[in-house]
Image 1: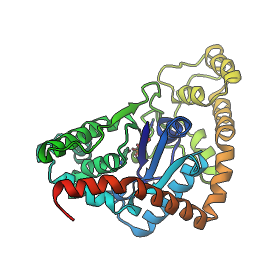
Image 2 (image 1 turned 90 degrees about the horizontal axis):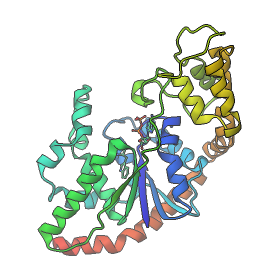
Image 3 (image 1 turned 45 degrees about the vertical axis):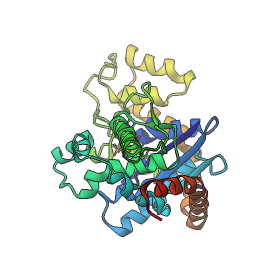
Image 4 (image 1 turned 60 degrees about the vertical axis):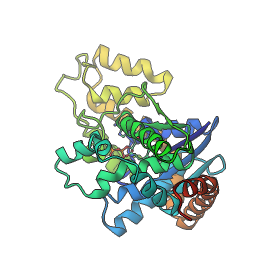
Length: 321
Ligand code: ADP
Ligand code: TRP
């Protein structure tokens, strides 16, 4: 099966991104033909500063590689290195009804949050459909929030087929990891860069430790058992603790005698044990931008070979070139 997914370089990678997305990307590499890209054209709908865009792309690329996406097994590329994507986006736009896009939750949500919408933000699902359809992906691993965009992608493909009377695209299926609970942030809400409650994966140790130590907890005295319900600290400990340490975590909550400060120190230890190797690799990659660029350009060349026959079919179908 062909798998494709992407992440926007619109903020620093946090542990929610790893457990909710990148961990699945890594696992799928061993069984499928995978295409993973950096959705920099998507990020332009919100990041509009060239310097910041460049560093976010560099950080995300180093993060992908450090966390185990392997250019020998997957095709890794930057969306903007495939000019065929915006070209296909336009062909698809002309068969996409306004109503379909007006019904998209993510657009409505962003507007409700007070984002002043630009046309790019409105048209974003068409760009996403082009990302997916262009490599004929069968499976698209995404979070629940992206499920509707997959339905829109299928609708757009079907509409193209109906208009031009030819079946060119593969209709993709979403691969939604239901067992991956939403990773909570330090305030107990969903961890998200837009809530400022993240624990980053990379970067200097000290601020990460400080973040973990500032996890919101209640005022249960040290000697008392601690409530698990609604505790972000408990959920994070469960996500991170190695199997042999799980009884310690349960006992710390159920029996009392262990303070929240001590538990947070443990959480920080587990964090380093989980990400230590990736963090060193990330630092090496960040110090060698030429190597990262080489990997991305090689990936783009492979992706362009994949998409060429489909683009020929599409151009022939619409009567252009
Ligand atoms: P953010 O919410 O920080 O803006 P993105 O929307 O860029 O993150 O998410 C990138 C990927 O990481 C998506 O596939 C999303 O489902 C996943 N993800 C983000 N936050 C979490 C979280 N708190 N728990 C689980 N998965 C998450
Ligand atoms: N919209 C996705 C997000 O915000 C990122 C994305 C862009 C994507 N194009 C994609 C994901 C294609 C999967 C497939 O997380």
